[in-house]
Image (cartoon, rainbow, N blue to C red; front, side, top):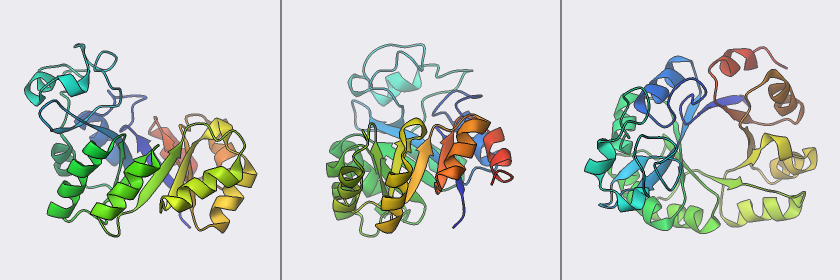
Length: 230
C-alpha cells in the first residue's frame, strides 16, 4: 500500500493555514492529499477555518458561526489571503481532499455539495464525532470517512471499535500517542491509520516504524523526505 503524505491545512508550517495559497503550495509540493477544516458561517456558507473563532488565524475576532460570509471575506487570513469557501478550494486544486467537520449541520451542507458535484471519489470526510461520520455515510453512500481520535489513552479495542461502528475507513491519531498494538489491531479490522502532525525526521521514522499508512504534515519537505525513509 502506498504511504500517503497529507498536507495539513495546506502546508501550514510555511503558509497561512486553510488558505488557497497554502492549498496550492501543498499541491505543488506533491502532497498526495490535502486536509482542511470546514465550518459554517452565520448564513450557512461552508468556509475553511479550523478554530471556532477567527481570532487566531485572521485579523478579526468572534465566532465563525456569528459572522456572515461577507464579514469573513473581509478578514485577512494571513499574507493578504481571504477565508475561502469550500467550492473555491475545489476549483483551486485538483488533489484529493480530506475535509474535517465537527458537527452534523456542516456535514449536511458538505454532503449536498459532494452529491451535486459528484465528489465521492475525491473528498474524504473526517471527524472526531462518530455521529458526524454516520450522518455523512447516510447522506452520501460510498463516501470514505476517517475517525480522528484525540486521545486514545491506550485503549486499542475501544478506538478500533469506535471506528468500525461508525463505518470509517481510517483512523487518524496524534503521532506522539500511537501504539503499535493499535496500528496492528486497526489493520486487522481493515482500517487505514494515519498520524499527525509529522513535522520532523524522527517523527517520520517513527511513523514508518509503526507501519502507518500515511502522515499529515505542516511542511512540504516531509513529502520529499518520506519517499526515501524506510
